[in-house]
Amino acid sequence: MRLIYLLLTSLFLYFPLSGQQFINVNHEAGIWHKANRYFTGVVVFDFNNDGWDDILLTSGLYTDSTKLYKNNNGVFTDVTVSSGINILNIQDHLTVGGASADLDNDGDRDLIVTNYLCGGSFCNPTIFRNNGNSTFTDITVTSGIHMNIFSKAVAFGDVNGDGYLDIYFSNYDKGTHYTYDSVFNITGYEVDCYPNFFYLNNKNFTFTDKTSDYHLNNSGCTHTSIFTDFDNDNDVDLLVSNDFGNWFNWDNALYRNKFPVADFEDISMPSNMNRELFSMGIACGDYDNDGDFDYYFTNIGKNIFMRNNGNNTFTDVAGMYHVENEWAIQDSSYQTSWGCNFLDADNDGDEDLFVSCGWFNIDFPYTSYPSPNKLYRSENSGAFFTDVSASAGIDNPLSKSGSALIDYNNDGKMDILNIAAFISRPGVTSDSTQTLLYKNVTNNGNHYLKIKIEGVKNNRDGFGSKIAVYTNGKRQLKEVDGGGSSHSSQGTSYNLFGLGTSTMADSVKVYWLGGRVQTLKNVAADQTINIVEDTTLAIVSKVFEISPPAIAVYPNPVRGSKIKIDVPAAIIFQSYAITDINGRMVQQSNLSPSAKNIQIELPLLNEGYYFLTLTDAQREVYNTRFIILK
Image (tube, rainbow, N blue to C red; front, top):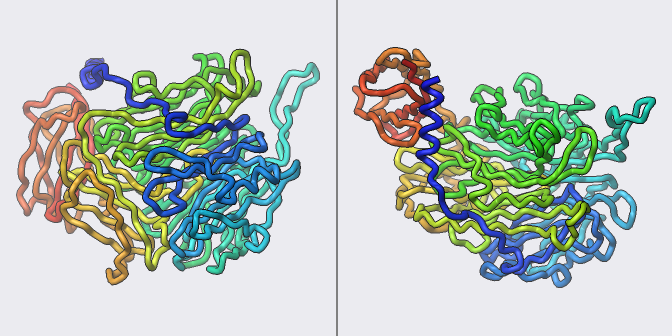
């Protein structure tokens, strides 16, 4: 009981009341857009290579609302017609998602838009080639991609290491109906789902269906999927988020890439990723700064937060961190969460969590409104999360769907684009439900580093590669967004790292897909840098640095005044530091280089939650945690 009291007390001490962190500037920035109902996504990409991210907004059930906006130094101009994207509206496409990638490595970003219907019938995703002059050409017919189904999202990843991006399509249902009992009570659903498809890039702007060859068959009414390297072996794996899992046992799925063998292995069950949800979206981030990626899934009702255990298994920690967002009305009606994103909202070096919410008018399970967004602030490398939605100004109650990260004004603070999802109800009109642009107005003086990478041997966009930034013994790790993230969306390809009060990053490392590690030293803060792949670097077989061996502290919890640490072979620790839950340094010292069984005396530490950081001779950092009980 005393420990709980100490933790709660420290939370209140750490979070003083502060001003609003985000404000909606959609109209001020030139964005006038509305989408009808749910299922909608947004694409952030720089289609004209001017260093300012542009945006594509989908329409939902409106036939004329697909919009392409060009960013003019922080103010957007509608270029839907002049760019050629307006063909989607002319042909009555009901667009729902998309993603952008340089599919032919020619230096500009091409575009794929997924459709619900085209002129009243199921149709193909639309494939646009970037002409390099701010216009696009529809090449769907000649692309080799022919599905004619309800396609929701698209993800890009180079699965075979040939330097060209391949494509995975997340596809949805042919029709959904309630089932009833003899007195017409709703008992469940009757759903028929389309299969997903995987297409290999032929390097000439055509693609070949290889779904069965790579064992990526999945027919679970998929909302979204992402390519991600969950096991740090320098190839992209695939994570699939399925709807109706609670009803039809359509689990979420994790497929491990067996590269260089041209195949994937379904490890959903042994990894514990086979969760049955009404799964809507995925966020990927290293919330605890331990060097591997964790994943947050949205749902109708309780969301889940899958922590990477570093051994090809995952544990749901949503309840532990109080980020489930389960109820619209407590113990009465469920909340509906759609998009989700990890971001460092205050540039303190910790991954915060944004969740986009929108009422979904169904009666089984029962949901209701309002649908306020959530912002959970992380502290101390994910030691705890706090709901700051209201004070941050992020809790708009109207219906929203997909979301994406964008630093739209290039000020080094991450903003959030949140697409509207109009659903009629008393007092709510389509005009009042508009796509939101949340401008980050945090003014805490923290520094940042914004990084974009460019592949040479790798795919031009660097999708699948990872970036690590080291500052004052702290490591942050991010993965370039290859599409499908959040809900049917894609965020910026600029990775923004918060540096806190530091004015320099000690080092920046790019872990290129395939095994090259490229390092920059002493990088000044508050700038955007572009890192081009150095193909002269040696290829390593596995990135051991990203996932250092686990450091075991025992006993844990600690009931005495001493902890012991077993040092892994071939590692020489030079120093340690202990911080408390408020981030205060409470103990630090150098270590004997010959020590293999470290003992640390803790005579002055009170009961509570602590963080241990060990630094080795190469300045690599190892983190773990322990609890003192007295």
